[in-house]
Amino acid sequence: MLYRENGQFKTDYASDQQIFPIRQDRIAMGALLVLAFVLVPLFGSEYMFRAILIPFLILALAALGLNILVGYCGQISLGTGAFMAVGAYAAYNFQVRIEGMPVVLSMLLGGLCATMVGVVFGIPSLRIKGLYLAVATLAAQFFVDWAFLRIKWFTNDSASGSVSVANISVFGLPVETPVAKYLFCLSFLFVFGLLAKNLVRSHIGREWMAIRDMDVAASVIGIRPVYAKLTAFAVSSFIVGVAGALWAFVYLGSWEPAAFNINRSFDLLFMVIIGGLGSIMGSFFGAAFIVLLPILLDQLLPAIGSLFGLTFDTAVVAHVVFMIFGALIVFFLIVEPHGLARLWAIAKEKLRLWPFPH
Image 1: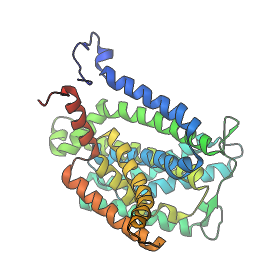
Image 2 (image 1 turned 135 degrees about the vertical axis):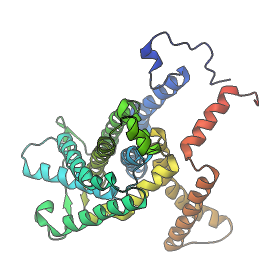
Image 3 (image 1 turned 90 degrees about the horizontal axis):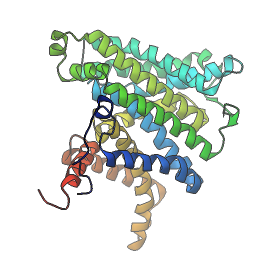
Image 4 (image 1 turned 180 degrees about the vertical axis):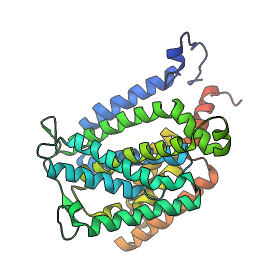
């Protein structure tokens, strides 16, 4: 019984309201933070940082923002890529048009701009929901793509819509090496993850969940649907906008509107669904699944083919990876519709009784 709770009594309200009330969870989280902030920067390779960890951290942050809207408030959105684009281009404009603007402040202001756009496109949620709301947010995706491609002011008069940033520094320290970029993204994810976890446990988070479960009953008991839905859109768009700025500034460096197209919105929605709706941990699981699995399959397929004397060119490997990836998504959704976070919760329940079967 490695995960037993016996003897862990709560004697005050503060200890009873902890994010991790069980001692084993606190130890595991502390060890994970030490691993992420200390050991990985010391022993990680450049490929691991550039191809795996940095994209995982940024997409996990974006999935976290989308999960607040879809998982906790029940409002379907297909415009997440658009809100990422607004955050990226707004942060870029603050950087190039205001001399000496700190990068972190530019990203936060880009998140605020994404918040305003998200609230505007969230207004239809007051009257429609479900697939109709998904179509309305999809319109935001197409509108933002068109705006950044056609309105040259947003791209500093760039003919192709492509912009770039260089020489990122925070408090005078350059953020240029893979390790520095990794720690920069990890710090954002840690802060926003902590804030999101506390937010969904507050009265606002409970209002979101009430609206998600039954909006009519929620309004009957005094919850304001307008306030709850628009705050969910605002918080979600802010986090997604900051993630978009990180994706552009730290991971891409040079980008165009196609970097935030509809495929990005679908990827983030799949992360939330596979990871687990209404779960902070599920955002991390979903991002890891979407980011790591294609890389793993891309490495394994040629190795497996060589065992049988088969050779695959790059195009065949790419198509087979897509097929297996889609099949695994369907498999996981059939096995556990509530996502990987539910599987993690079941595993924790089993560990409470292990090695006993019941």
